[in-house]
Length: 128
Ligand SMILES: [Cu+2]
Image (cartoon, rainbow, N blue to C red):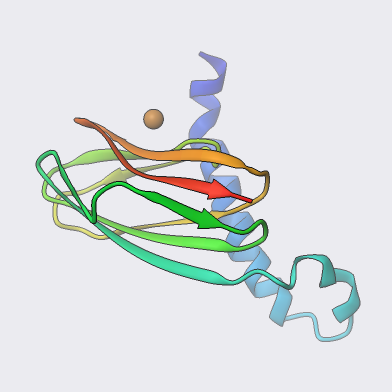
């Protein structure tokens, strides 16, 4: 129960952290050495479409190196809820509106990205 109520807050913090991380990296020209540990990440983009119970492309495993970001653009033909396990990111999906999730690999493991209504697995993110 407590975890459930804390989730929207966690999503907010995570979103802010991602946005803040991007802008602070470019707005602080004086201290480049301080942020060197996270400077190797790259961004990879993947578009997924949901039509009824069909996921396109078919659910597969996507490798994500630690420190890299997967930008997932999901478009569904119905309202739904998008949930990235392990990353603890949850977003509302509106019919026909592309929704972008940014997942940054932090801890090695396999994490499922799914919808809740109906319950579908979109892909498995393998962080390594
Ligand atoms: Cu879920």
